[in-house]
Amino acid sequence: MVVRLTDTWTEILRRRASNNSTGAYTEPVRDMLGEMVAAAALMQANIKFDGSLVLQIFGDGPVKLAVVEVQPDLALRATATVVGQVETSATLSQMVNANNEGRCAITLDPNSKFPGQQPYQGVVPLFDDRKHKIEKISEVLEHYMLQSEQLDTTLVLAANEQVAAGLLIQRLPVQGSGNLSGSLVSKENEDQIGLDEHYNRIAILASSLKRDELLTLNVETILHRLFWEEQITRFEPLQGASAPRFACSCSRERVGRMIVSLGREEAESILSERADIEVGCEFCGVQYRFDAVDAAQLFTAPVQQLDGGAAPH
Image 1 (cartoon, rainbow, N blue to C red):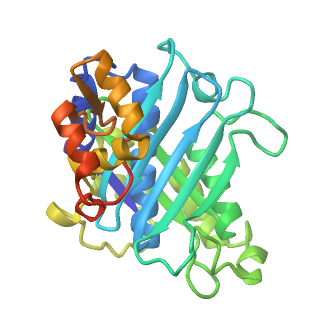
Image 2: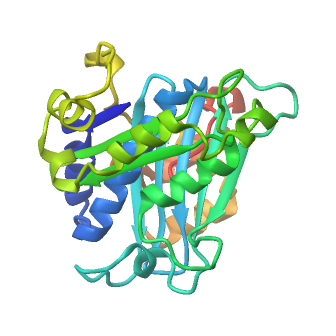
C-alpha cells in the first residue's frame, strides 16, 4: 500500500504556520509529523477500522506530543506540541526520547461501543530490545505491529514541506485477518514471523526505496523500480472524497462543553482578568471566544443542547 499526501499535508502545515502563537514547525518536527501522518493513513486504510485511529508519540524532549487522528473515511488531522528549541539537525530521540522515556501509542476508538467498552490502546517504547534508541518512526511502528499483530511489516516513510508519503508491506495472516488490537492474532501467524520467503523477498525490495525516490517519484514508477520482476495487480487509487484529506472535528459547541466542565467559578475567574475566554484548536488553528454573556448562556442552557465529544486539545 502506498500513500502520497500533498494538498492534505500542505494544508496542515499552512494552518500551523499561520498560528501567531506557535509559528511554523522546524524542519525535523515537520518531517517527523509528516511521516506519522503518512503512517497513520496507511494503517487506517489497511485495517479498515470503523472508528478513529490515533497515533501518538510523546516523551521527554522538546516535542512533548505529536498526534495524528484518522477517521474511517480517511479524514485526518495532526499537530505537535513543542516546548523549547529544536535544532535543525535534531534526531527523533533528541526531539522526544532524550532519556529513553519516549513512547509511541496507537489508540483504536470504535464508533459503536458496547456498554462499558473502552478504546483499545497499545504502547511501545522508543527503544529496541537492547535499550538502544530508535531513530526512525518506521522502525518504531514496525516493532509495534509485529507485537500487536504478529505479522511481519515493512514501512518506508518520508516527508518534506510538500509531500508526506509512505509505503507499507505486510505479510498476509495465515488465517483470519490482522488487527492492530490483536483480537484476531493466532499462534499460526506468530509461528511464521520471519519465515515467509515471498514476504522476505518483497520486504527487501521495498526497503531499498530511498527517501528522495518516495518523495519525488509517482506510484507507477516506484512500483516498477521495486517490483519489476514481480506480478503486480494494481488497485484503483482512492481519490477525491474517498482519499485522505484534512478535516477537523472541533466546534464551538464542544468548546462550550469544555468550559462548562471547568465550572462557573473558574470561568468567571478567567473573565475577571480578561474580556473573554479564548480557546484555540491546535489541529486547525480556529480560535473560539466566549465573552461574559456567552459564558453565562453556557451555564443556563439545558445540558442536552450542548454537543458531546471531546474539546480541542
